[in-house]
Image (tube, rainbow, N blue to C red):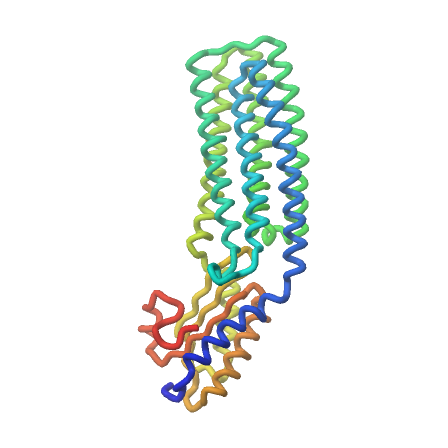
Length: 345
């Protein structure tokens, strides 16, 4: 592969161009998807704000720990919806000199903050209310039970309507494919948890009313806390994986590898690296060994054609880099970087 004296300079040019070419398609559909997600988040925000006020007032009137736990849950959800709206707005900003790969990972960052909000404001407060109820042994008047159950019934209907809206969008966006969006995934998790949490609170309040034992309502509050902590952990783990650089789906990586192996000009594919840089964008970097005897102009033509083929095969490949190397495969695979010291884009 010593036939490419000027390949490094040439390779940097074609490496940058391929990403722009690949990002043209899908922009309109991505914006439309974002608009639908924004409406879903706004619906959830409106529902949670109204419900949070109702639960807080009802919880104070009824002195109900389970109802106050649900109020904290709704406040946390409302704050999280604000985070998700920020994610939708900021993640679609175009790339600039400071962030050459764009701002797609903002979506994952704000989703991580939403998970932290669920854990701290929802889960921890629910545990506190449950322990406090067990310690104080508070009693409620019949009017308090009735007011609390009415508030929870209204909350169940509102949260259920928001959940149905979110699930409808998930189906419109391809089911599991739609759940790739961390904003939509968070709304579904929040609303689903809210419906289950309201159900637990109602069961705890009814059992407290029937038996006179506060342990039932306190247990419901503790169960809500455990549920919120679990959901926060799952959402936070997914956001963490995406923030630190999650690879593309194995199926997409396999298609890219098969395409590279099928090119007659490529002698071998020494290494293939992928990383998600946003909801619908992936960075692709491949270290390849070309057939000997090609001049630099031929190398440019081959690389441009290969990069365009990858972009057609994997539309989410927003940035594509090819690194030509003549190193042995073992050495190439040991390298921690997608582009080595020789001819990286």
